[in-house]
Image 1 (cartoon, helix red, strand yellow):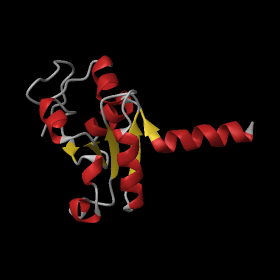
Image 2 (cartoon, helix red, strand yellow):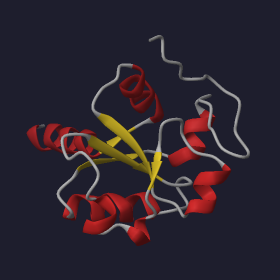
Image 3 (tube, rainbow, N blue to C red):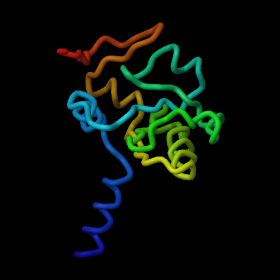
Length: 130
């Protein structure tokens, strides 16, 4: 039983689902959505507030402006893409706290959340009340 508990605790420390990310962003937690796809994918559509650093470009120089006190939630297209895994690994090696978004942007939209970009998906929108 203890091994199972440890397995699931570890799993949850490395990934989150779209509703977890939505809640974290809505509650202004120290979390950043990080799109690890190439720029043209990000420009087409991305999670609101997300930043884009393609996993192929992740180096000390390209990440030096980022706040290491935040958790970076890496995402890509979805389960048929491993750019988020590659990005999370590189970010961890660079000393950042990371998690991977389960299902990527496809599950984000599947759960009904909006995207931004040149071809956005209309869904639940994040809004600041300040």
